[in-house]
Image (cartoon, rainbow, N blue to C red; front, side):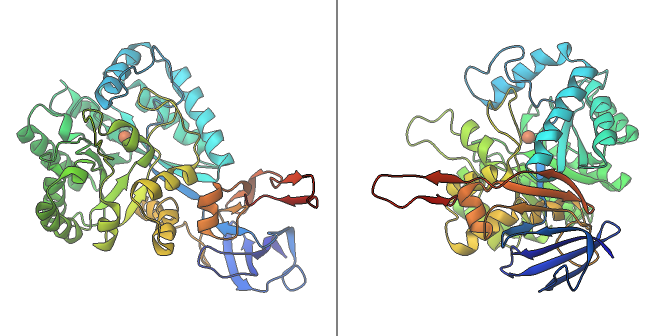
Length: 426
Ligand code: FE2
């Protein structure tokens, strides 16, 4: 007998009446027409012709800052730079206990929304490495239900901030997974480029992946992504390096971008755009017209790059809203990047499921036989409807074990002159 059978499901690729058989935490069969009669199981779930997807994955988050909104004050200008200054004011007041508590609370939100893997940057520019130790503790505690990957992020600049390189190396020693950076925040363009070279070399030496905040700026001459692509191919790190944000690409000269995209493709550089945050932080120095500031997602996809949408922030010094809902993130990306064709909308869904799983190297994720039996059942028929409705999560499973369940959302209308009706697709 199977551990779990989910039948009568639709899959993101359009297949309907599908059954997913689970044994020992893995998908053992994925076939049309599987039913309790043909595949008896200890737990049987009728998906009700709704969409069963691989879990959501967030490729870019800051779990050390999350849920700290208003501490010690609110960001008045709404800019990235005031956010960084505000975080600097908050840092001395942080305690490990409060960091752990807020991160665990956010992970509860995430699971409820079907978000089961998160890559979080953690600020290493603190001689106490308080946030590093706190998030390593959180990583251990959430391991049964969330894959938490940590990036050693020198928020104040690995060269600009005294002692940051040693702190970054120490955090890797303590168990942080990925090398981060912030070249556009270094003192000069030359220092920015030097920081990219230094950090990529460190990652190559230690066999680590790289994920840098890169060119999070409206300055069209912020071109650190060029160095990132160059170092990636020089060091043979193809496919293991991610440029996060890349907002300056929005403002760059088109001719230059036509060369840059080819260099990025050659290096198989991954891209993470953060639509909710970039649409609120970028263009703050413009009057009108105001630039959107999102990186060039459709063009990057057309060049063959793997592109994910990240949440980046939830209720912190940079962003006052958010709820861990990756469908909200994807919906904003869809709108800002004008990805409105059927194919592009599906790419937006992939940008919060399969693409970030690939960027994080989560080979066990995905709806296929032999993969981990982790999925989310959405109250929608297909990925486009899921985006349109920011679909309700009916159930969430990790390795065949149900972690969250909720009743379908529906509204009953009793309108004068109309028959009573119940539906949710409005
Ligand atoms: Fe970020």
